[in-house]
Image (cartoon, rainbow, N blue to C red; front, side, top):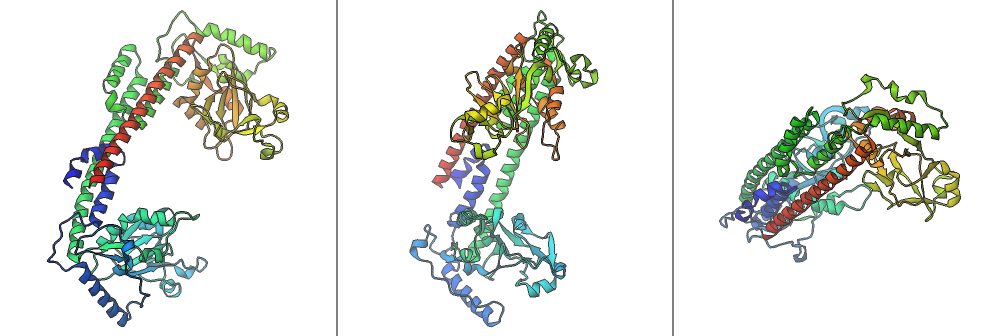
Length: 561
């Protein structure tokens, strides 16, 4: 333990360090290495003899049923060497184990009684003193249920909670997904609680493979486990409680430090965005750069930094402005290009001159201009599903891009579908070309947006993806960054349509406001964002490497114990 105590700081800094410490405490406890042995105390060999005598007595009194004898632990089942006064036994030797049942739900007389009824999801409470449902005395008599006494140790056998353990602070029955142990008088129930905690991963492994993970009562009672003398069980429990309290303090300190970092980062970012002049902006940025190692040593904070970079970019605070360049002048050229594409026809709803002050969400440089997204695009339109649906997909051919292929960092073709040339030609209106932006407009991935690279070949898109094709004097990288900005992503969430509000309509997209800088400034901003994002990627890699190194050091320490 002295070796471990030297590395508490590493455990504090390592992402799963405290969890690893907790596991180690239990591991040492169950190996007889956590407290000193007292050879003057009654050995576990004598203890198991006394437990067997207690079993016989309880059977004669009719308090427990006679159980089938389990085989003695064989040498090939022994996991490691125990202290000489310990003994390898089976969990069946710790008490009587029973699983419960679920009374017929259609029989209302079985429910809303006064008997607490524990389900597997409630076992993870640790100490169980209440239940969400209660059953009646009738259910207890008619439905193969037992009333487990206070102090019984419960184990969850099914589903996501498999291996969770709790101790009853109330008398309670259980459902069939819970196995309850009424411990013998010579077993410390808190020792059993900690023993089962140490076995959790073993139970999870045993239960894997089925549609719903599960272990049986038979597997539980046959599990080979270490049994120390009764007095040592008590000392082990006391020591575990002491060390777990220390782990709690370490965890609280870690959480406090993390929360402080998040608050500092949040405040700095807020000040950066709110800065209304160059002096306050530079002062805040100076503070951030001076505290970079402190502020940006978690991925959460790096993600926040990415968001603020995008927010600063679309507000004109990321690069210096050239007042000789004017988006107002360029917007006229953009309108001419748009009119030539539409044959002079205009959509009155998209008139930039009709943008009211109340619509404008934030200030932009005076040489920028607010426009509607529809006015800077030659196309906004979603794809469609080819006639025949999945049946027309091919093993090769023209890529058919679906929402699962669209990510903010680019297109991913691991599970891309293909269509043939004929189908592609029939869907000519939704062909994808280089420099397009592809935006997911439905479902859980709504708002994800990818740039189509310059060297891209042929492709088509599904109805869950919309094509945004920009006019010539619009930098697609700048608009990509704009779409990924917190402002635009929040706007998407506000204007969703459909029964579950998980759809983005074309008309809503066309009306969205875009803060448009001069073309050359768009390019400068896009380049600057890309540079800063590369820095963020380096920060994330450093965090991963540092975390990995800390974990390796901690694991090396744990391996020596």
